[in-house]
Length: 180
Image (cartoon, rainbow, N blue to C red; front, side, top):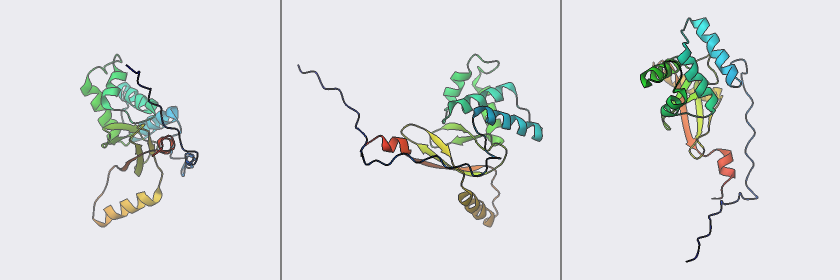
């Protein structure tokens, strides 16, 4: 009996465009650059607003930030297992509710996961690009989208608290790495 040949991964086309360079940060004073900066900004905002950032909330946020991509609640629970008071799912879900309520993380409904917000000090409307292949997510800074959505909502008398737009597709790296 002949042994089946192993499947080879298709090579990227020589004509495939390189992945685009990351966009420059439009408002660096509002943007958290890196995990430790994000945690410091959230701690600062909590002090300024008189919010109680408990150790469990901090630990949940730290794990979400360190993931560097959307993280599902069960994966977060697994990472927090063994931490002080964090073994009970309701405790972790309450921490997630707090972080969501105050705009420190985003809940991505389309992939049922959470993503750290890179603008934790301000409320904003943000488009998020989500790759369905590698599950990477990128929070964009786009004043035009934000302004247009806020204007449409205001015209209808709607006051938004937190919002984001989820755009599902394939990231540049995944697109460049496959031949279609």
